[in-house]
Image 1: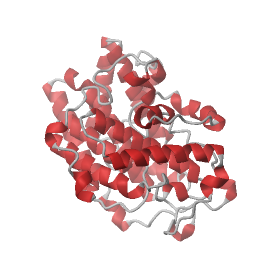
Image 2 (image 1 turned 60 degrees about the horizontal axis):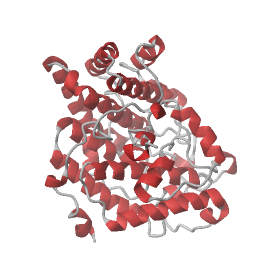
Image 3 (image 1 turned 135 degrees about the horizontal axis):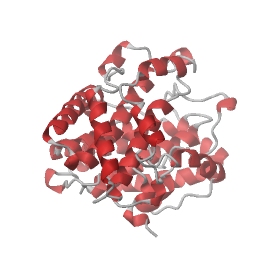
Length: 373
């Protein structure tokens, strides 16, 4: 089975989409009208240049909750305003976008954050089952994912960079990749599927930036094998779905991430193994089960260890994850399953939709050409 999955994607199959998530950047109402013509946008994005994420994380985050708005919001605004500058051919805004892109690189933004190899010397999240204990993995994870989203803007702006600017951005990208993403190529995950496909989407983004098809093939084959491992036959996700009072929340979070990844891989020429496709359909159906019958969803037993299970009812999240705001679009596009009505999700996701891009997948699935009504 393992070899069967590995054999699905080959070098000759891969053709990077110039727009990353689509063949070209088109105007998209779903991402809003944020622009670099607005000083507030420029100031918010500029605030991320050289930002001390580690101090922020130490002061405001723990194993249960991560306060990441000061790094995630600026990079999402960067993406939205850059996307709009390109789709509207706004030359002044494109110039600002380019200057910001280079400034991020020149200031080694987030490079001083905890890297993957440094995690070996750090205590685990939820140490002694304490939700208030520090989670060093979160510090690493959000730096990794924000860098990945930075690279999406870099892909869009690449043609506008002169030789010196390209060199600055490329050198920064290469060292950030080595510290935050490259180690994940050999990482053996056992449980869970989280933002940006546990780093897999970031590796794809870097492969696109560096035009490295071999890297893309290796990553897609690895990730397909892992999806097959943690997405169970009945649609539940090993770890995500079994996190107690937040099982529904994390199940939808993981599914959104997986569907976004699979969409990109397919767009770039990969054939999705039938076994994985069936599991994603099942996982979509389980997402709906959690909406319509939470007790039945939660009744599924899990025999393995789940140290990050949420057992305190007061920390419950009985709704689809609000950050997974692309989920309804992705479910229909990738699996053909329609997301059931979840009023809490629909209300809460509005807060994240205003940022324009889904930080769990690196794009807004409501912009996909398949979704243009």
